[in-house]
Amino acid sequence: MKVITIFLFLMLVPCFYLSQMKTGTFSDLEILQKEKPKPVIIHMYTSWCSVCKIESFQLNKNKDLVKLINENFYLISFDPEKMKEKINFQGKEFNYLPNGNSGIHELALALSKNKNKPVYPLWIILDKDQNLIEYHEGKFKPEEMKLKLEKVLKF
Image (cartoon, rainbow, N blue to C red):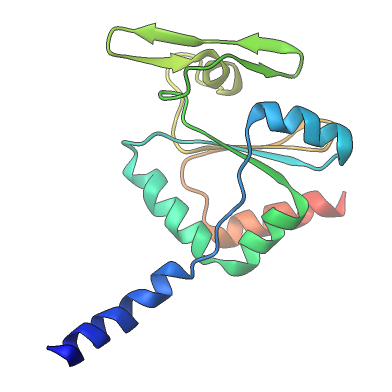
């Protein structure tokens, strides 16, 4: 029994050492951009989206990508169906729009090309002046994202 316990422990240990992308909030972003301007990545997802969960696991598993993001970008992870607080972004105020037991944040609708129902996951990459560089609906593979972010840093 001890051997099985030790074996299971050793099998699970790597799971605890996955890198984590550092995320912030929209209110943090405003302050951070004044102190040290950097490109911004906005990641919209929902808790019910299985593709979002798989993607998140795969991206966090890629240590080079995590390091690239943590050192060179501000990352905002945003669940528009759960975020109910007011958000100020790019000089505008956005609120949560309740709809019975659910709802969606106005910012998600403003950022999405599909104004009725955003596609998840959604990745928006802005330069340090908050100009749109990339709009990516659906799963972003780690290799693709890394190449795209490296191009952003070259400009």
